[in-house]
Image (cartoon, rainbow, N blue to C red; front, side, top):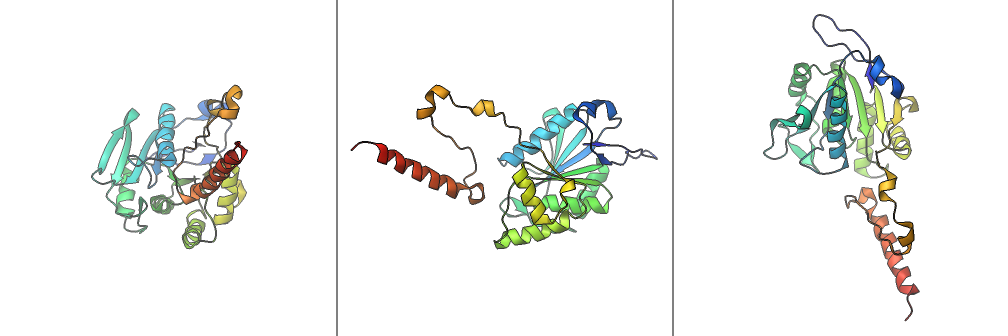
Length: 259
């Protein structure tokens, strides 16, 4: 991301998102970004979104940007904590409702979040995961303050179950005037565009940074190699398909063995 604009009266410059080529990122930037990452999912909870929210600010800080993270409190972990490279994390005292996600109240969190945005001179809001109530709250408040907003949507979601229908309806409201949406795959992009009734021009795809060469088995031992799946064992991750595939493979091995 890059922005352009001039500030006045001691205020930070307003952010305007624009597309730039990778080779010109370091030559065209004249200001420091003031970025706020927000989600319900962060350490000490473990997962792919949590790791992404930690690693991305480290890269942005290395470029000279200022980044903070806003997350709900985890047990006794409340207040301000500092991580590597002085990454500031706000564990705000908001109650968790279900599955590590807080209750979405909008106006209840407004005073606290507005104070953080003003105190940190935030110009860009980057929310993560459409299943996060904190992400939707922050997007809503950012728009009322005239801040630029970005959402990275990590998981896929269906269209039939009750919770999926409710989430999709909420997504159409939250993303109706969001500056940019990022998806982690083209399948995820199609899913998000359909769920939120978006125009494809504002949705970008940035794949997960996985080096496939690190996971290529030895070709000489391919016949006796073992497939290892690293994932949370939840239904939306396709554990039912994994179980069916594993069962079929075991049956095929048993049938191929001589009596």
